[in-house]
Amino acid sequence: MILGTAWGLSNGATVALSVLLAFAFGYTFTFLPLLRSGMALRSALAVAFAADTASITLMEIVDNAIMLVIPGAMGAGLDEVLFWGSLALSLVLAGAAAFPLNRFLIQRGQGHALAHAEHSH
Image 1 (tube, rainbow, N blue to C red):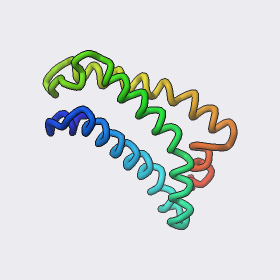
Image 2: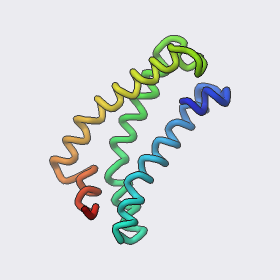
Image 3: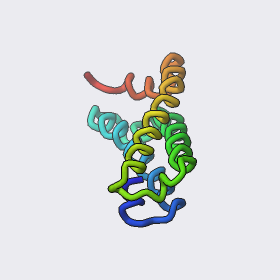
Image 4: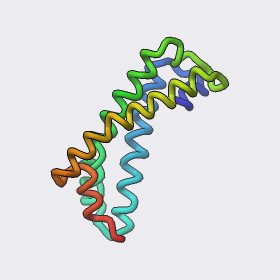
C-alpha cells in the first residue's frame, strides 16, 4: 500500500503490488531459515508454500478489502492520518482473521507446523 500510494499507482495496481510483495516476503521469511538449516532447495520451497499460502491469502483478502471499503483510504496520501489509520486497522484485522486459521492448521500439523518442525533450534 505504501509503495503504491507513494508512486501514485491506481487502486488495482496498488493492490496487486501489495499482494505480490506480501507473498514474496512471506515465503522468503519462511524459506530462508529452512534453506539455512540445510534443507534442499525444492523441499524448502515446498514447505514454505505449504506453510504460508493459506495465511497470506486470507490476510491479503482482509487487508485489501478493508482498505478498499474505507471511504477515501486508497486515495489518501502518505501524509494523511486516514491512510495510516486505515492501514493500521486493516493489518490488525487481517492478523486477527489469520490467527484462528493458523491455529487450526498448526493443531492439525499443517501450515506453520510444517516449517516449525524443520527449523533447527
